[in-house]
Length: 333
Image (cartoon, rainbow, N blue to C red; front, side, top):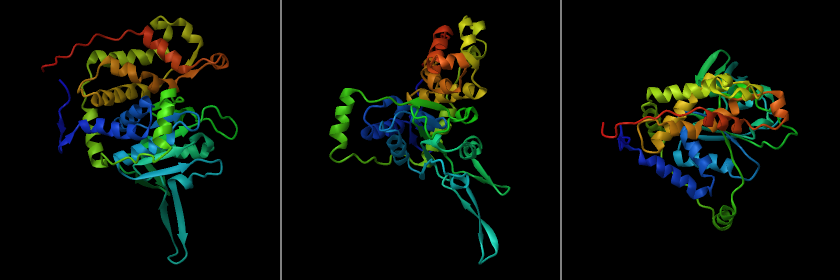
C-alpha cells in the first residue's frame, strides 16, 4: 500500500513534493540534483555536489535550506583555513581569567561547505567527527550538533591548482556524490528568462521538527529480505567481481565499497521510496541511487585511473551483471 497520508503530528507526506516543487521554482533543470538533495535530507546523509562553476550548486543548497527551514551557514573553504575556523576554539578572557568555548559555524542545521577541496587536509579532517558522529569535541568536552544536521559540499572536479583531493575516509562519509552537468539549451533559455529580471525567492515549506518526523517515517519503510540480499550482492560484487561473472573488473577495482555503502543503499532507497509515495522498498529504488552512493566509494587501480576509467561506469556495469530480485508486494495488505 502507499505510505500513510499523515504521519504522527499531522504531517502530510505530500509536503515532500511541495518542497521539491518550491526548489524547482528557483533552480532551472537539474532535477536529479534537487531530488538527491531531498533524499539525502530524508536519509540523514551528507551530499557532495561536483560540477564546474556556475551550474547552481551553491544556489541549490541555499534554496533547499530556505525551503526546509532551520539554521544555515556557508563556509568558503580556502587554503588558509584552520580547524578552529570551522569547529570552534577556546578563547581566554582576561576580565574573568577563564577560557570560554566559542563554537564554530558548523553548529547549524544546514552547513554549506563551498569548494571543500580548496582546504588542506587538517581542515578537512576536522569535519570527520562532525559528519560521522554529529558532534564536536573541544578541550575534552563534547558538544552535540543541532538535529537535523546535513553537510552539503561543493567542489570543482576540473581544477587542479590550489586544491586538495578529498581523502577516501572523508568521501566515504558522504551518502551521495552527485555530478552536476551543464544545463541543456532549453533550460539555458529558461534560466535567461527567469533569472535576468527578478529572480524567484523561495518560500519556507517545512521546519526542522517536521523534517525529523519525515526522517523517522523513512526509517520505517519496509525492506524485503530479497531486496536486502540484492543490496549485499551489489556491494560484494565490488569486492569480489570474479564471483559474479565480472573477472575483468579485478584489474580495474583496487578496493571495493565499504559497509557504509550497504547502509547508504538501504537508507537512500528508503528515502526515495517515501518520496515516491510508498512505504516499501523496491529493487528499482536501490538501482536508482546505486551510482550516486557507490561511485565515489570505489577505489580504482593505478592502471584504471591512467586509462581514464570512470567509477560510475563500473557501478553501471555491476548493475547490469547482478540481476535484481522479483519482489511482489501485497498492495491490499
